[in-house]
Image (cartoon, rainbow, N blue to C red; front, side):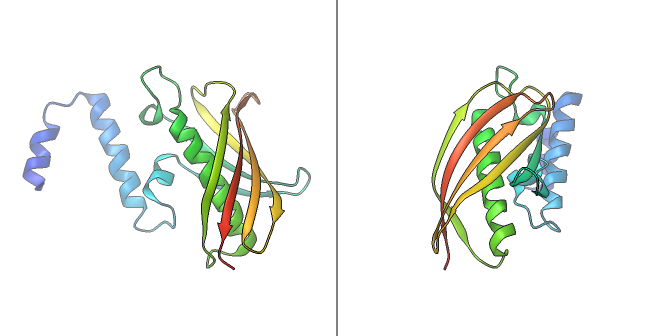
Length: 158
């Protein structure tokens, strides 16, 4: 694909589609200077740190039109990706970003559709083994309603 070819593809887009393309390009450009992957940039993924009182790590993402399915709700795969990313970020915060970890198992239960606004993931580390970590994450919307809950098992580089 050349720039000329891309320009031709863009010619018949409506204003909403042009805005979507702009958001995607901006997310792609942010990955040049951000430690986050492209999908994390699309989710507007943010780490809010450790909540001492609750004993959980808190992360958030923004529900946007680009992340919704045909029913105008957040796509379930994006919800699962948000949870997986929050769990991975939790391990990085606990172990340091120089240690690798990968998801072995992720079980997500969907409780209520997410329609718009910010979602907050509350992740608790249940077990910290030498090479295995088990976590639980609960996701709430801005109104404090539960959206999803999950458990995950991760392999940690020793």
